Image 1 (cartoon, helix red, strand yellow):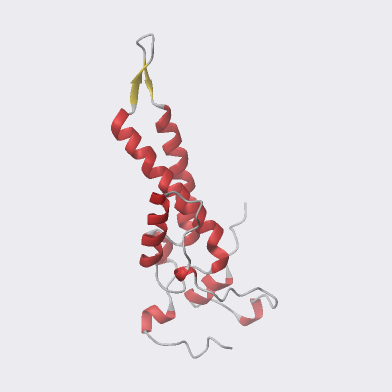
Image 2 (image 1 turned 90 degrees about the horizontal axis):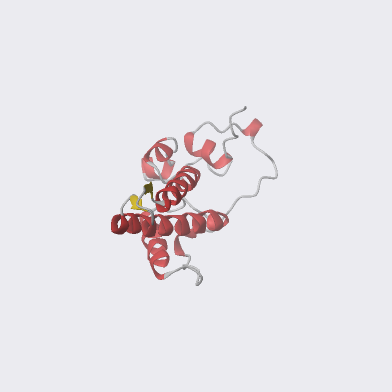
Length: 150
């Protein structure tokens, strides 16, 4: 199976973008997600995660087109926290009505949620490994790239 395509923005940040291989009509998101308010449908704890996370991410890392993926990450992370609290309360092993010991169903849910979170974190650049693959010119030098407008 072929490796997934690298987004143009990632190539630009890594310094490997070649003008001859750049898609001509690729849409360019312009608005940073940093100032977005959390949606009303999120729980209070998810809204808190939303605000905290947007304060922590570097400027320009997420744009408004990343809104849906970021919402999914916030909901998954909130669910992961709730499941972890439930495991802390109830434990990973439960006793059935007939006295048998079995693995808690919560453990299954937290494992699936963690897998979804890992995928979203890699897509959004929220892990140390994902961030190490992308370095911003502005972050590295503190100045505007003179070639950015070409």
